[in-house]
Image 1 (cartoon, helix red, strand yellow):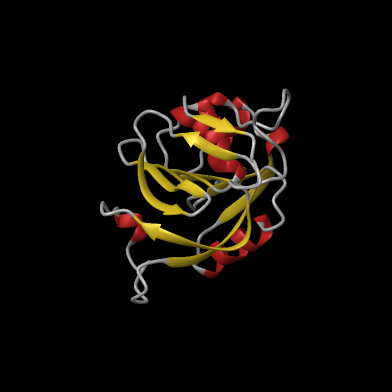
Image 2 (cartoon, rainbow, N blue to C red; image 1 turned 90 degrees about the horizontal axis):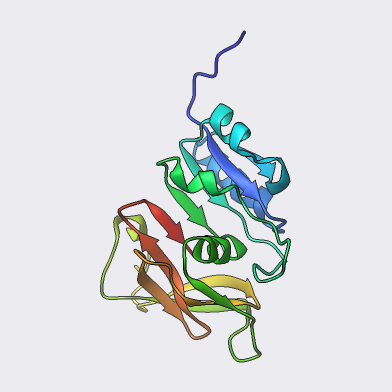
Length: 177
């Protein structure tokens, strides 16, 4: 039997159009990662895969819809860093006690947006917000929005349509954008 000799990052795919791009960028940084569709990620899979970190991709669904895609609850107990992106952020907030609301025209963001950092900083954002403008240009694609962050999370960046654009629970190493 061949033993894996490298650390692995798991990307749980919720249907984002940019999941492959995320993986490619990680691989360009020499990070070994694998993409697996959410429906294939079970408790047994997580135990066998033993990721060193997890990314929840974005996706087109709404966490408020019955039967919407979810990771297994055990992912939060692995003791590894987790990054939730777009739908992944909404899943994380919903699962951990935050609140997600259906988007309205005023809160939806599609396309270019500008994120402004909070006064508090975290190491994860080192190198960001360095162009002198005090904000970072990003790409947003969300209709629903996080209305209340989960307990233990703090806000590290906002945008006009997303008051919780960058959040983190540093104790658990959970990050969401």
